[in-house]
Image (cartoon, rainbow, N blue to C red; front, side, top):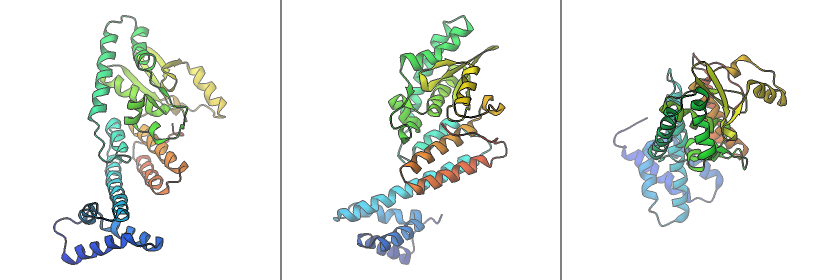
Amino acid sequence: MPSGPQPPATREHIRTLIGLLEDDSSAVLEVVRDEILRHGRLARTGLLRTLRAESPRLRGRARTILSELDRRDVMRRLIRHAMRPSIDLERALFLLGRLENPRLDSRPYVRALDAMAEEVASRSARETHPLSRAMVLPQYLGDELGFIGSEVDYEHRDNVHLHRAIERKRGMPLTLTAIYLFVARRSGVHATALPLPGHVLLRIRDGRRGLIVDPFHGGKVRTRDDCVRYLAEHSLVPRPQWFHDATDRELFQRHALNLMNSYQVRGFSRPALDLHRLALVLGRAPEQDAVGQSS
């Protein structure tokens, strides 16, 4: 991306383009918008100045293009993160949230996860039986704090984004499982994601014992037979990889697919295509295994 002072000819060209944002022709506006976006960061100063213009139409259209520039910057960062040898799922999900709000501050949500983990660690330390220790996490997050699946407008982006799920205590199975997972990692609980297609679960281990819980249903305990029954109800034959621990890369890919689907069902094709590209980049990583459906 070019940087440094803009040549006068470029500045004048951008000013002309921004002036054309008041045109009544949708065809002209489409060409002008694409040309401004092509200049990327070089056009940002002029667009920011336009936010003080007298014309409400000009201000509104400049604000829309600035939002698109912000979204493209976030997408570039997401692609760079996806190309790394290893994925930091928590960092990746907060970055994903900036597609919705480019100025999202993750610190309050990190502090919320820290506080939940501190409480889980404290309560776990008071338990002597392995099963009781394993149940502290789902009982605290599900029963006490009330994290549960969202049945209303299930595919809404609020149910996909980590920060919104922390705020609302509602979300998709994958998003709620991520919250359980991040609290477990902080509190010393050995937990992993069980990547069933369409309904990710959490597996908690304490020594040789293992416990499967369903964050979407308030931390309800599930058995392997329950999982097999769920697959049969959806006409799916059990596959070994669905019962293996999911990697952060796999989980992030599924988050990207969930968000892509949320945009698709609402007719937002451009961000949906960008997220499809992100999912493909995640899938091309050398250590990536094939994953099932999202959620």
